[in-house]
Amino acid sequence: MKLDYYKSSDFCQSLVIQYEHVQAEGKNISVIDRHIPSGCASLVFNSSGRAAIHEEPLIHLPRHFMVVPLFRAVNIGIYEDLDSFIITCKASVLSKLLSLNLSSFKNDFYRRSENDGLKTIEQKFIDKKSATDRITIIEQFFYEKGLSDYVPDEIDRLYNLIMEGRGCVPIAQQVEQFDQSPRYFRQHFIERVGINAKTLARIVRVNYLWSMIMKNSATDFQDMVFEGSYFDQAHLIHDFKKIVGESPSYFFKRNIDNVMIMSGKM
Image (cartoon, rainbow, N blue to C red; front, side, top):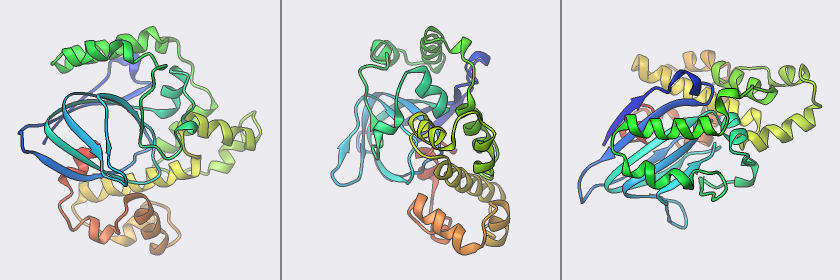
């Protein structure tokens, strides 16, 4: 498989984290591995090939869909000359921009909505082959949705603090500073992000530790405990297994190239 990354234009940086173009060439290709959550939401356009969620039951994915922030990894299968363009977004901004309640997604990996406006650009998007043309189409869509006038609110601020703070954020203290009651804020955070703030922080911490290990090409559990602000090694392993589905010692010993592509990490 091949993965290329692209940056957004300046006005889209409040929403778009990155663009990814995934290509898997070959009629007989079959790749199955984990997609590990990052705390982001993604818009996916598949112009060719097939993809499926390898859970019980097997779920074949449509051409266009949204991936919501998950609380655990899922197994994804890729088949037959896949050409997929993925827009990775800040969940709190995307949901507000498209007027979506992400809490209604529950435990779904994806959702295809007829009411988010994306159906209108699906065919136009798939007909274009170059990344530049596809980015122009999606950014024009975001512009028409009012992204250039978007003003971040308290939910966006906490979401950004967690994402930028590697998940090591005193959430309760932050929420107390906001005008809304903690209970009201928690409810609206889940509606905008799909998961609660504590779960998001755990996911972001695991992702940061993964990036740290890949950068240093070594696994030192004591460093991981310190960098992730864990109480001890047992808490680290518990969080890692709950989110990734494998222990860190097993995960980093196997070939995770496909996991990195599936999770937008290459």
